Amino acid sequence: MERDEKLVQRLLDGEFSPGEKKDILDRLESDPSLLREFITLRETVRVIEKSPRLAPPASFAAGVLDRLPEGRQPLPERFKEFFFARRMLRWNMAAATAAALMLLVLGAALFLYQPGKGGITMNGTTVSGQQAVTVRFRLYAPHARTVALAGEFNKWKVDETALIRQEDGAWVAELSLEPGTYTYMFVVNGKEWVPDPDADSYRDDGFGYKNSVLRVSTL
Amino acid sequence: MRKVLIFMTLALMAVAAGQAQAVPAGQGGLRDIRQSVEASSLSGEQKAALTQAAREAVEAGVPHEDVAVIVTGGLSQGADVHALTRFLAVARDVQAQGLPVRPVLNKIEQGSAKGVPPERIIEVVGRVRVNLVTARDMVDGVVAQGLAKNAPEEKKGAVEALAGALERGVPAGDIVELGQKAAEVKSSLSQFSRAVETLANLKEMGMPRDLALKAARKAVILNYSERGMARMERDLLTMRKSGMSWEDSFREMGAGMERCRGGMGGAGSGSGMGGGSGNGQRMQGK
Image (cartoon, rainbow over all chains, first blue to last red; front, side, top):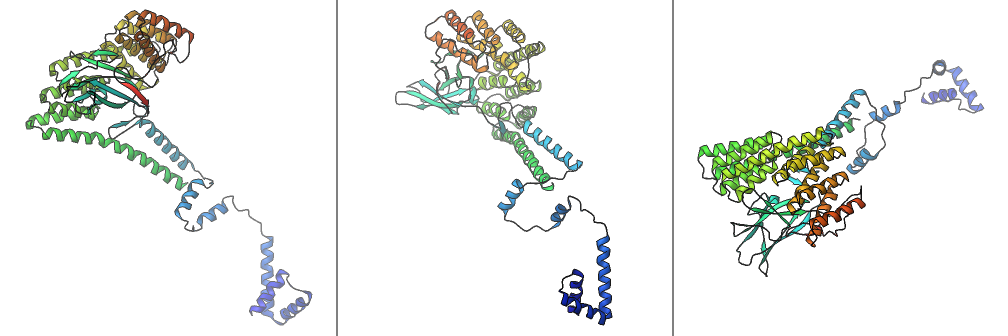
């Protein structure tokens, strides 16, 4: 039976030699059921051949591929494929509007993240984008027990910047400061406020003291 | 498309989380302040009043670091609670008025550190506040005359610069005159405020008032940048230190400015040694 079906298919496909054709036709004459099957198949083929051809939509292939289950690639490959593979994005207005709104919100968030000084303020400290300059402070005070530096750069805290005593009796400290103008004084032995004798200029602090003025620049 | 939207959502959430991370810093700072107050020997009522004043200041926008310095520094020096709450109230009010709060905080911190009586600090802070209000009116005036204001922060910077100049004894009339010149040549607000600072710096260095004003005005007319004005100050000081009189220094500088008209400026005949002044010596730029 299976052999007969194959013979019928080969007859319909035209895949036979002249000798074989006679054998097939003899078989069809001797077997009415086989003949009926042959005729049915032949009619079916004719109907299909006469029916109009419909062109599939352009996204047909992409849609089929989309439905196919994806094989599991290793993570680095998937990462690479996500970011660098060429894509054709299909948009609708809702998706386009959502994407545009997200970009707007992201841009606004990044813009508002800027503090005044061209850096980012996080956790209460300022990470500055400006170039810093190392400034050396020196006071000759051989009889002092302690010398500290207090000024605008450390909110006038007398216990934050201690100078280090040198062998010659001078006291020295180095600070990294952004360009700008700062007022400061030395604090000797924790209580005596002393202006810098080598400052270029001084400024009345309004309390009766003369602050030293430091101008830091990158010039 | 879905993956792109998911990715963008995650990025947006990361930015929001970053901002949320910054928000608790103020609350964290307040917690530190509260702990310092609790650890002090003040009465319960005093602690409550001081904590309340600190919270109000932080909530108004006063940097919590400065509030902490005022409170903890004041407590360690045995300052009166009433004085501390007054300091915080002044800072809060200045912040709420939209004025730059940094000059006020600087005076309070400085006065407290130097052991100045609170009443004196309040008096000085009052003068600073008056200067800030005057400066704001002046800035509004020059903006109305046509000075370009590129960013909101520019105005605050200008108010601070002008208030500082007034505090250093620069006559208001000189600032107004400089503002008119700046408006004439269509400077920006930041250029104008830098010129006012230059005027104050030159005066502070000892330059006669009329020469300082001429120098600042010339810098405005020649459209000097901030860097150019800093260089001009430095060169004038260098020439003065080398023994030249202010008049000769200014003349020499003026000739140099004309030669370099329209450039980045500061190209006078002074060699310029640069860096920080005072005993601070510039070591290196990082």
